Each structure stands twice: as C-alpha cells, then as structure tokens.
Image 1 (cartoon, rainbow over the protein chains, first blue to last red):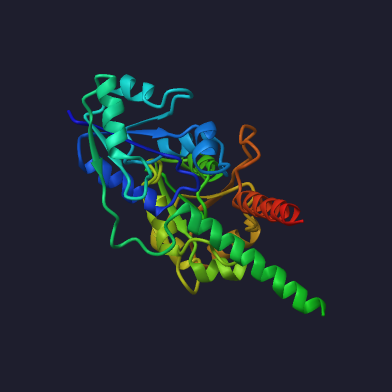
Image 2: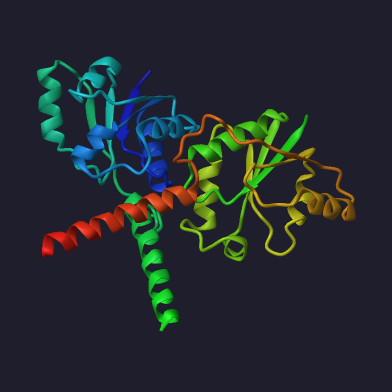
Length: 152
Length: 152
C-alpha cells in the first residue's frame, strides 16, 4: 500500500485544494493530509482566517481524505517520521524547495519520494484563497465607494 | 429509506455548514443537498463569492453528502417535486418560513415534512460566512491603518 502525504493550510477551502488532493491521491492508495498549525501559517504567510482545529475538521469531512492531522509545532519533519509516507506530494504553488526537503529527509533517514504536482488547466480563475480574499475586499471597496457617491 | 433534503448557498464552506448537514442527515438515511443558484443568492442575499458550479463541486466532495444538485432557476419547488424528500431540513438561521413552505408544498401535493434544526452549542465564533467576510475586511482595514501610520 502506497501512502501519500500532502500538506497545506487549507484556509477557506476551495476547488483548487480539492484538485491538489485528488492529484496527490492518484500517486498512491492512501491519502494522509497534514494541516499546518496556526503558528506555522503565521511564520510563513499571514494570520489564518480559520483556526487550525476548524481547518483540520473540514479536511476530515472530505471523501478523498483517508487520514488528517495537524502538523507538529517545532520540527516540521517530526510528522514525516511518524507517518513514513512513500510519497510526499507538493502542490504546484507550494513554496517548498524539493532539494532542501530531500536533504532534510536524508539526514533523518526517511526514504519518502518528493513529487511536484502540476497546475490544473481546468481550474477557473477563482481558485486560490488569496483570490477569494481579494474578491471580498474588492466588493467591500466597491460598496464603500457607492456609499460615498450616494452621500454627495 | 428516509430521504432528507437540505438547501443552502454554501459560499465559503465552513464548520457551521458541516454541523447543519450532519444534523440533517441524522433525520434519515440519505442526504440530498440543493445548492442555491447564483441568481437566487443575488435575489435573497448578495453577490456570491464562489460561482454555483464550484459551490456544488465542493459540496459533492463531502463524505456526509449522498447526492447534490443545483436548485431550479424559476420555481424553487420544482426541485422538491423532482426529489420527493421525506424530510426538508431547515438550518436554525435559514430565513424560510415553515408555514409558507408547508402551504406551497400542499398546493403541489408534496408530502415532505419540514424540520427546523437547532443551533449547535459547540460551534465557535468563526462559523458563518458573514463572520469570515467580516474577519477578512477587519484584517484589511487594520493593515491599511498600519500603512497610514507608517507613512506619517
């Protein structure tokens, strides 16, 4: 049985996430998803909109997901040691450096293979979390401008 | 087999939606979810952040959901005639008026029972779509204010 591990923040779940998880699952038999801790999200990206426990709960509700866990707080490779995945799937837009991961895995004597997935050609414009946030902010700015015009 | 129907917009899927769908499913054996059309959302609430096809796709990915369809464009009761649910589950915050629905069902000779679900005591603050949107806007306003202060 080939175990595939995929990691992500999964803040504001969208079809881009589903595509990533489906492509990851195709690489093996069992999909194990690691949901990034709030503390990790803050370090790497920004303040998460949804807290880690809720992001994990929602991921567990997906048909495609066999198991899901929160990441470890200190060494992000600790969870890889626990799970021993045959494959670690990276999304097309995930910033992780494959060489760096490979060297960290070798140091820890982990034999997982890294697979970088490609971008879907079919995903429409509104797929990413940042795009969703931008759309909400644009709608908000638009509404504020309308209100300003109406006040005049 | 008891067929339960639940309807909603499901824009920015969150744990509150999952709770609603799980409570609905408990009422029977099969959960059929109707995802509101963009045109219906515009009429009743606001411009949806996510287009109808993507909202439907995401709902179909949930383990709890047995079947999912988009609503009908003209008469919202047409889909009820198609599905013939034994039970129609209403979320605690869904604005539908039970008496009105009952009279519309009777007119169409549909015998579905309406069940109004209660609010979860365990859902944390950040559950609703409007709360998610408010949080994004607050973070944006905060960022803009910080930038203004830094410019001075």
